[in-house]
Structures are given as structure tokens and as C-alpha cells.
Amino acid sequence: GAGVSQSPRYKVAKRGQDVALRCDPISGHVSLFWYQQALGQGPEFLTYFQNEAQLDKSGLPSDRFFAERPEGSVSTLKIQRTQQEDSAVYLCASSRLAYEQYFGPGTRLTVT
Amino acid sequence: AQSVTQLDSQVPVFEEAPVELRCNYSSSVSVYLFWYVQYPNQGLQLLLKYLSGSTLVKGINGFEAEFNKSQTSFHLRKPSVHISDTAEYFCAVSDRGTNAGKSTFGDGTTLTVKP
Image (cartoon, rainbow over all chains, first blue to last red; front, side, top):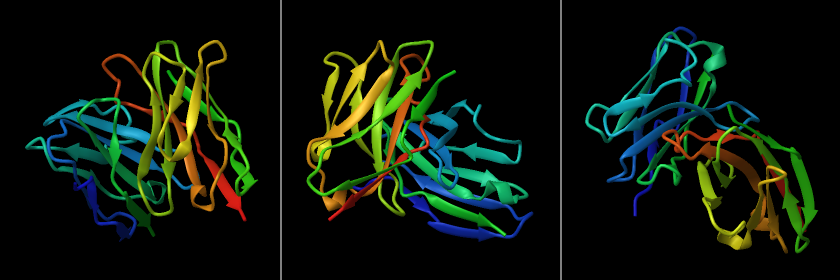
């Protein structure tokens, strides 16, 4: 069946631009997670949704980062006024059971 | 707070040799433990997980891992590797409570299998 999809796969933004990254979870998966993976490092938790409710956003690095999941399915991670340190791969994962996450291919963001 | 330490950043090994990728964790609560594999330009794929019960866990592609509570370790092993096992491997931990989905990852181990 279809897995988690993310778009775009690659995004180049000039410093100061706003970007929006999309995640389409597996159909029926209640939970959705966003992670940030810097080059050469493991993923770091950003935020977590259960249906449309954002239950944990403790990992968002600044108030420039905002995530939403208005209908409990597709999610968008928005980064305002991008900075070079935002360059990373942004991974989305969905799950039916909280401890079994299925990851998408990620969006590689490069801020120039 | 939880943390994960993957003790080897790179592991080179010859094809058909055994391999062990080491992972230690720290946590003040009971945890779930995971190993993921990541191929270039792809997302993470779950290899195996420890939730409870037997401390020896078998996963996909012939991998297995052993949970050692006293040593807070969860080392990944494979008795005979293939070229196709070349990838990045991540160990992860999440607590058993309401934040069960919030995983903390190690920095990864690059496994390179040479012919």
C-alpha cells in the first residue's frame, strides 16, 4: 500500500524566505510526527499530532517554526524567515500505534 | 531526559562477516527501543523493536538485537552481512508513557560492507 509521502523532496530557499513542507500520512494513521535531521546526525523530534490536536511541540527550535494538521490527515510544517541553520532534512512519520512509526522519504531543505 | 549513544560512527566489514553495532541509552523511565536503517535519500525503515518480553528481538533482513537492562544497551547484530546491508543505522528510544511516540535517536552508525 501507499506509504508516507512528503513534498517537495528538495527545496532551496534564500535566507529570509518562508517555506511550507507537506506530509501525507498513511491513511487511517492517527499519529503524525515531524523530525529534523541535520547532516551527519540522527533525527531530532520537532512536534507530534494526534488527529488534528498538536499534543507536543517542545522540539520546535523557534517561533519561526509552525506545524498544523487541520483535518487530522495532511500536515504542513511552515518555517518563516528561513535561516542557514534551518538547512536539514525534515522527516515526517505516521503511526497507528505510537511506538511503530512509518517514515516518509523526507524533504531536504537548503537555505542559501 | 533520554539520550542515546551509538558507540561507533563507522563500521567497515567484509561481506559474509558478522557485525555488531553498539547502542547505549539512558533514561529515568522504562523505555521502548528501536533500530532503524536509512538508505541514501530515503526515510528510515524499522528493522526491529523491543517492547517487552524476551530480551532477544529478531527483525527484518536477518538482524537481531539484545536488550540488556543492567547495561542499558541494545546492540544490533547480524551473523553474515551482504553488500546490500551498506547503509546508516540508527538506534532510538522512547518512553512508555504518554510520549511513547516521541523518539530520541542516536547519531547513527555507517555500516560499509566491502566485497
